[in-house]
Length: 119
Image (cartoon, rainbow, N blue to C red):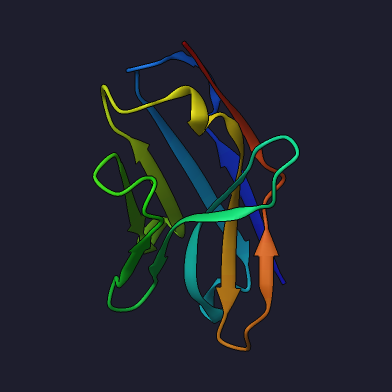
């Protein structure tokens, strides 16, 4: 089992920046990839960004390319999502979920952190 704890959400004005953090614990040796999904009210949960724990291969959703940066710190078993300065838009408002996938293809989710971007 893998446990994920997110932090860093909040209320920010459009054009501002935020940094989300996610710390993993438990069976961390089994994690092959970590990342972030988001879910806006009335919408499905969609991938934002994902990074593999070995090799650092990264995938971004088209909607965040060039605006968000995902990174990892394997020694801290953590993954981060930097929402860059001057990049946040009201349509980025959502609950952001940290996610981890094991080598056995099991998926784990954090409790979610609210990001609200005001116009």
